[in-house]
Length: 288
Length: 317
Image (cartoon, rainbow over all chains, first blue to last red; front, side, top):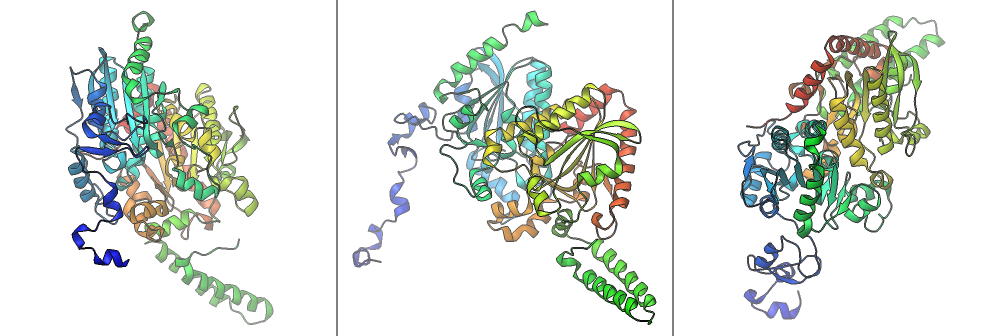
């Protein structure tokens, strides 16, 4: 400690970490360009930095709120709740992690599914809540997604899913792995029924979610600069002992390698998806 | 065959070493030690049975990864005849970490797909330690679609640490390759039986593991992430792999309870590597029995049941 710091009374002392943050609630800072942003304005801009267009994380409900027409709306599978079947415990109990995540996000699990309309086109839309245990896919996510596809099939409407997930939820063991099979099988039914499925991959979409429902879109759309891949970059770097190429596993990299159809700015997604869906569903009647 | 004993098998290793010593004595002298050898062999069997009757999840993981454990091709040569290996995904390459082809099971044509690990250093590298790249999954998919067209049942063998975490694998769409297999297998119009013979490592295992029946060897594992991987993420230390293995429930009985596995095939005391022929006979009997059940079903019924099986995975309230 320097002599100056020693002299300063403790209430004037600041430490590096707190000094950089801005008071919660009114102002926030863009992680990419450091611009100080008015919270309300950022929310209006659907969590995209007005200065540099950096796409920040957005909650599932805020996402759907902005994406869907104001009415009608019907939530799907909201009554389903997670259970800790195997009393999983790592450094903390799974039950505690669930309770904490529920408190933090106000959601019961990491997916919200709502039937509604986008620019008057009836659809079902799902979104991952990344702040809920990293958007990890366990039984509740899998079941809500399956219910969403079934709703989609029964009403003959398209499905849209916004992914933001680290992958399968390890705390649910093998059952979380099986959600990959469950959700992919559900999409198989949707495909057989010739209903469009648009997958929007947002930052980050990796692991078991990337290797199941997120990559199975009839059209795969990525948000700018989103991290998308099967294995996370840190593990790959440790395995191959090579420096990863610039922009590796970013949306632009996936577009270049043919894994997504397009990159779309969040502020344009509603228009773009409505436009794509309107073309895909136009011939429905005459094809049957 | 020289045994590579695992840590927890040390009492067995010591006895076996003693037996070897006595055998040398037997050769060199007139002293008859065969009674003593027989006594020690009996003791060795007892100890083996006692150790293997109560293995922890982590110990089972080590048996599942044993360097002498029978691999897919060891089973193929013992279970089938006329195996014709088919190569390549028709788009990029042939992945040696996956073997696929046509064969006969008691005379009946079938399609076979499995992960393949290597035995010695050179083959291990060639097979990439049984970790497939996207072209491996796409080769598997090609063979499964071929099987569907010609109404051949698909028999898969799972034994992989996981899909390969490499730069090229990501560039060529590892995620998409796995996801596509899951979707196509869920609707493939022919019976599918998957057998977990060693390590069922995550999405890389599941990508050839969606089926009507899942069989699992007694000392094999199946998990969403390796115990080491789970430990390093949740415990922030890979030293906790033992705890992670226990907590995740990666062994056959737990998986059967979760409805993921239908049948458990017994292994010889000491593990499958002690007797390839015996374990292959057990696996074959199980596959034949399950296939009989499945071929008795109408195709539509088969597909509906598969769909229901997949739909039912999960615990919630």
